[in-house]
Amino acid sequence: MAERYASVYSSVWDDMAGLLDKCKLLLLYLASSPHSTILNADRQPVGYIIEDLEWTQEEIEETLNLLEKKGWIAWDPVTSEVAILYVRLRNLIMSITQVKAAKKIATGIKSEKIAETVHQILVKTLSVTDESTEALLNTLYDRASIPYQKGFVQKQKQRQNQKLNKNQDQNPKTEKESDLPSEKKNREREEIEARFGVKV
Image 1 (cartoon, helix red, strand yellow):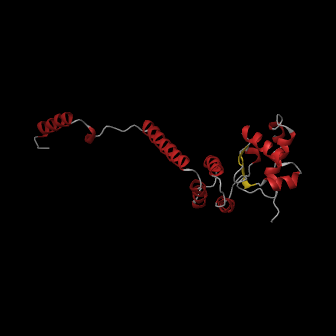
Image 2 (cartoon, helix red, strand yellow):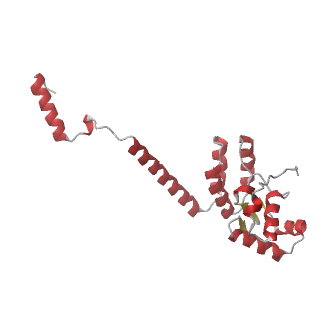
Image 3 (cartoon, helix red, strand yellow):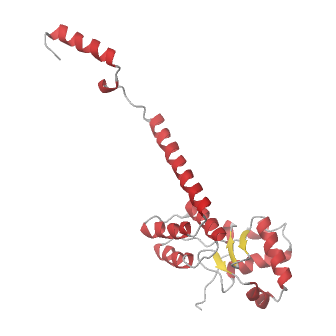
């Protein structure tokens, strides 16, 4: 396995001030373990954590549940996949190369819950926009549940409608002859005919 490193903001310690020590340690482990990835969503089997941290299975599952309850991670015990939600422990995807690497990882996600979580995050945070980005988001979307997919499409339509309405408010349509009521157009036509002596 190729060696990689993970950055940790110094402010992380202020944010984690209210957490139990075991929660702090497990968070940092999830962000920097050999199984972590650029996508911040990884398969983290309890057996690996037992071996690396020398904890019991009960301690690990209890701590994972606690971190999820507090909104730091999303965890699917069925697939053993974990996604980090806390922004200061997430890897930033800032290049096409990273996007392509993230897509390869996304194809291996088994959990609908984790796919949905990561998709929600990347829709809001990805700064790289090209075909590779769309491919990454589509890969995650395809692994999400049907209710999530329907809800996402509905929200996209609502955003598009809101954007369209906002643009129309900012650029009100000028009244054109074709938009005028028929009676008004008839009066204007009669006035033109009377004034210039021609049929319109």
